[in-house]
Each structure stands twice: as structure tokens, then as C-alpha cells.
Length: 253
Image (cartoon, rainbow, N blue to C red; front, side, top):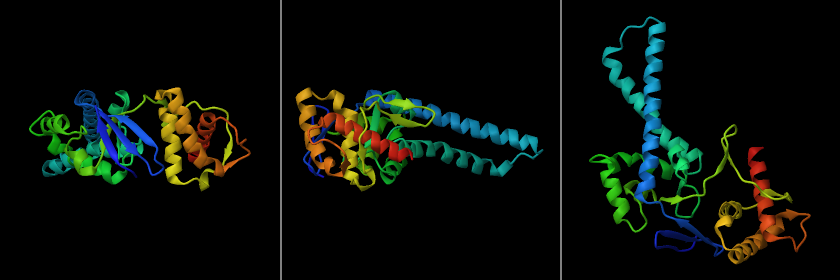
């Protein structure tokens, strides 16, 4: 992975293939609203767990748990807190709040943050929350050159603006409208190449036509050796869209 730069609220990451990925850093406003939505969801999980235990205890004729009530509260708190970690990890750097406000957590390589990074940034959420209302976290975002709270600094993550995805709610997968398909041996495609294809398809609409064609050509040159029955002069952009569709279909299988 190449160097990283920040200019006027924009994060630029240069990949090993010298392709520049540009992200708009998220400010404290949208991040605060997204965090509020997520805290409401976590609170609902906590309350639902407490209500469910009370109902179950009543159905079996159990006695009040007395001194074990504290243990129950701690367990429910951990379950509710795990929402931040598991959803952010499984949804590629997004929670419900982040999806609503078009945000995503990424790592230093521009890819969605991995499990360890997500775990670290959420473990430090309590520190960022002090003394209340995300006081320390907001100060860190304001004074950090990369809009990072303490959890982000420790985990090496960044919160960026992401295009609002079209979601297949039945499958809980992000879907993208792609062009006609070509056959690509996706199992042989290196992980870095797969990430470049997905990043390009997700961001191509925001590129100027000339930049889109230039970046597509550079990525396509690396991908074409893995393709089957593709004409050498096929449009690079349509080719990459088809590769992305093949990757998604392979993942679903």
C-alpha cells in the first residue's frame, strides 16, 4: 500500500498498483447523528432482552433473581454493545446509523475495517463518550487532521462518506446494477484485484468521464488475464462491472 494524504477533508489512498482511491472524510455532525441512531438500536436490544427474561422467568414461575440481577444487567449490556462490533464488521464498516447517513469505516488500505480494528475502536467508545455526549470523541474529531476519534486513532480506522447503497433487505446484501456479464475465474483473482474492482464499481459514478476511463483501463489491464471469452477491445468500464457481478455471484454461492 502506498502513501496516504489528506486535503480539504478528503482522504487519498494510493494502492500497490498506484491507483488513487479518494474518500470524503465524515465530520462530527453526521457521525453524531449516526451514533445516536445506533445507541437507540442498542438500547432497544437491551430493553428487549430484559423484557424477554422477565417474561420467561414469569412463565416458569421463577423467583426474583435478587443478587444475580447485576450479572443479568452486565450480560445484557455486553449483548447490546456487541451490536456495534458485529454489525459494523459484518456490514463492511457500516451499522444501521452509518447506512442511514451514508458513512463507512475503512482501514488504512481503503478496505472496510477488519474485525480486530472494529473491536478496538468500539472498545474505546466509552472513553470517547466521556465526560458525556461524546465530549472527548468530538474534540478528537475536530482537532485530528483525519477526523479520527480516539478509537479510530488506536485502531487505524477512518470514517468516510460512502455512496448510499441499494440494499436487498431479504438477503442483507448490498447490490449494484451491473452491465452484461462475462465469465471470469473469480477464484483465481487475487484479493487486492477483487477489492480494486469493487471500489471502482462503487465509486465510478463520481468520477469524470476521462478519469473513469483512465482508471478503468489500468485496473482492467490487470484483470483481463483472468477472464474468459472477452474481446481485447471490450469497453473497460463495462468489463469491470461484469467482473464485479461475477464476484458478487460467487460470494452468494
